[in-house]
Length: 551
Image (cartoon, helix red, strand yellow):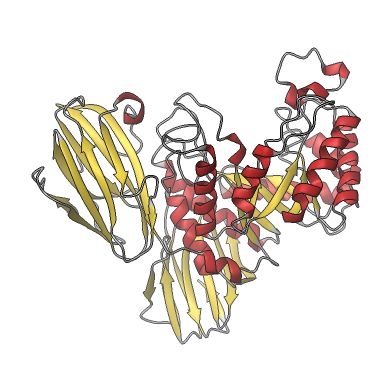
């Protein structure tokens, strides 16, 4: 049986909850599992809370306890509450029974690194009244690791929405309570920088009321500045001016006008003013978003090609050295993708594409992208994944989200992609237990999901590394080899949620096994390391190795 803590009196000061990797799960947690449907306390119960010592600061350095205040008010529905800690494999690792009312200071003492999910369940008898969900992560900052990351070979980034912090959702403002619009942007960017990411694709909240008014960059300057001030380079995805500039033949459409083509004059002015302002911080400039998807482009393909020509001319004029990327193709209209590929031969430096879902979906999309561009006459296209995500549509899917993100990063790197952007940092749709899909690696309240801890470990492990070769891609099993200074890194995973025994043989003098959160364990026999490849990639660092194989 795992660790169960006895309930303490309300008068108690902080009590400690020890946590470590691979704790034995609780046999009978007595609370709904993570796939269950439970009313969201953020929406239905205002008398419960989980608060870190500093508001919205759920990520800390190793070696420090993570402290949270647990409150259940006397007015809360139900007779009792249960606080449960879940590890990154979705196992219940520790639990605390609480009586009403309570106001407890809980100190989680974490051995090593880890990201943990917290659920606070309220019960009326056996009825599940509500569930409050938060999470925290213990991992070192990767700010220094960004400096040694081989961005000349492969970079890792994210999509983000700093320009939408003034929006609202069905829960409330996009910015959480107590934060200003700018504070919300800053914290999002800070967490992504701390994880070690290098590139961001932000939205561009530029305002322009009419052709006789000046273009207002106030909100866009603040939004992009939150990221560029922290060392991020931009995937500067350029789009179109506001609705008033729509082509006349589309004036009477009743669906959202932002999907439709604009007139040439406003389009060129829009680009001519924004490019000198932001291109200096751009790693590359991307031509619109998913033009082969009718949800984003409802003009004709020829009208997109015409707009892309204007954009390329303006980019060459304002930022002649900036690499230009295709606008995140997604193959929803494959005939259009082919038309765009043929029309833009010789005009692009990068082919941007998108792929959501698991790594097998990514493989299928990437094969199609390569075939499409080869048929169109692109001699040596360089691909970049400018949007890849996995929706955490239920709490148990947060593990899938984390493992899938790592698999897809490894696949993109191994197959020569210039980089990959996760979708996304902070999703602005509201709390975790909501009906629509949530894509963020941090949540509405800036709590890190398992994906955040896994991403931080990935950046730490592969900082300074270069891809060497594919060891195997015999589905459902893949293994890759990287090199880093005097070491080789072997990583292996299964594309299904299961395990496969893997033996890594080499001439290493010393070997370490790295778990999904970045904890290192010395391998007893460095020349033959036994791994359990699973949904999370299993990783071994082979110090001094010159020959490596897997079996």
